[in-house]
Image (cartoon, rainbow, N blue to C red; front, side, top):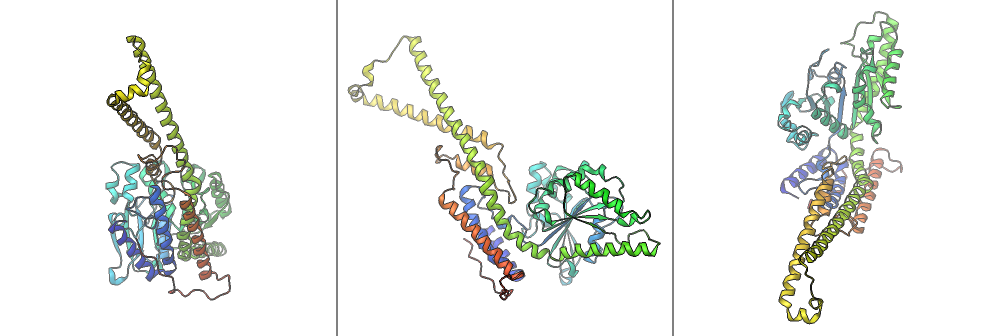
Length: 489
């Protein structure tokens, strides 16, 4: 582990000790998992699982253009942070966090403030952008910005406001960032504009914002918000508008989920009829209260999410990664053996062909012990030369086949972006037997290590339950009385 990584993790420990001691006891389990992944080559020693997730409560707000995302955020925070309007007013992802008034209050900082700081969810995102759009990583300022506010509503959490989403016109790099924040977020609010009468025309947008969430194990963190529902007051048909959107979302694959209708009083069209106005307000206030309740609970969700990451990675490792590596290694073994066999066959055929062409056959005397003893220098030189050529060809074939098999393997697989390509190449290394079935670094001991991690994760979940739910009926653990984290090695 590098000095830089140790320093980063030490700062994380210090922060958790002051801000959320409940998570401090989870860090040693991350470090133990790191050691297992280092041995397999799935994780390089310049990083840690703990550095690949967001330890801060994270709320993401996504949606179509002019769907009222920024207006909603401003109202929630209690500050005019984001520009609002009917057109696209901001084409960047904006990370909003708290900063005390003594520290400067409201400020807007460039994207590099996020890309270079491991405390934020976009640490080194420029490298990810570079992978999908060569040359775009250096233009990080075009994608991200950081805004701070001294309002108490945002204290203890981070909100990400996304640029208006239009799937027909999204750059690949923007979609990559979107997927990145979907994975990291504890709560995702997906906004749609009730003023659009034809939601079916937005199937491309729904495809990315909805369809991809259906198969996720954390789909419950997505809330779908139909904003500006006040526009339905003119015809008094909110049920029809909501029904049209729900059908469109269902067509995108979502058959269940939480769907809310809201509007902002200041930005709304006046509703003249008093009874109608009260009915719309009552429904809006009920849904807004539910949304804000989920936003206020995001820290609790964060605690469970961080513990669950370990279980998720363990499942990916056992059920996805290891089978892929075993399959890749089996292909590699077959390829090398076939290559060696072909080479041997060509060599034998060439020798026979040469013998027939030159009408020369070796005397049987050359294969007797007496001849070898009498000509041991020639025999030794000949055998060594053959062995060197055979080994040289064999290792060349190992490398050649390994490169071909490694080419389609992912360098960033799963939630924490495990490096399958590097793990396979380590399994196909010079000191790895082609007949060993298991990938490098994996053994019965490693399997036992993984079971220990799983058992520890279950203990962490029980500790959180005792702290927040107290099913045992015992007194919850005092907030500051958390076991000390193990020393980083």
